[in-house]
Length: 182
Image (cartoon, rainbow, N blue to C red):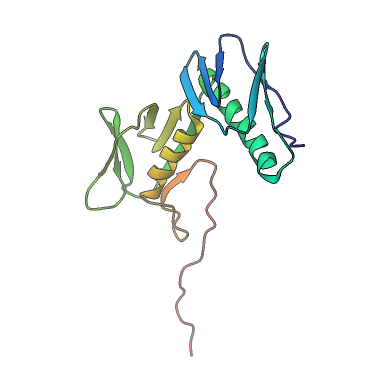
C-alpha cells in the first residue's frame, strides 16, 4: 500500500471541500482551487478529513494513489497557507524592478525583459537584495512561474552569475589557467 496515499488529508476549519465525480474543489481563506482527478481514484470526505481510495493493486492504480493524495493535500495547503518560491539575482548590473504588476528584469542583455504576472500569481521584489518572491495558492503555477523566470538567465558555473533559487547551490568550476612552460 502507498505510504503517502493511505494518509488522510486533514481539512482545517474554514475550508470547504466539494467532490463531484472526479472533480475536486476546495475553498478557503486565500481563494478557491478546482481540479479534475483521475477517474479511477475514489475521493471520500469523512467529517474533517479526506481519504483517497484506489480500486485495485494494479500498477497504474498504485502509481496514481500517492499522486492523487498529494494533489489534494497541496490544494488544501494552498487555500489555507499558500506557496512561495524565492529567486536570487546575482551578477554585476543584474537587477529587477516592478512595472505595474509585471516584472522588469535587467539580466545583461541589450534590452530589459518584461515578464507579466500570470493569473493567481503575485510578486514581491526586494530591489536592494535583488530577490524575487513568487507567491500563489497553486503549487504547480508558483513552481512553473519561478522556473520560467530562472530560465531567462540560468546560473553559470564559472562566476555564479544568473537567476537561481534561494536554496540552490552552484557547483563552481575553475577557469582556464595560463600555460606553464612547455
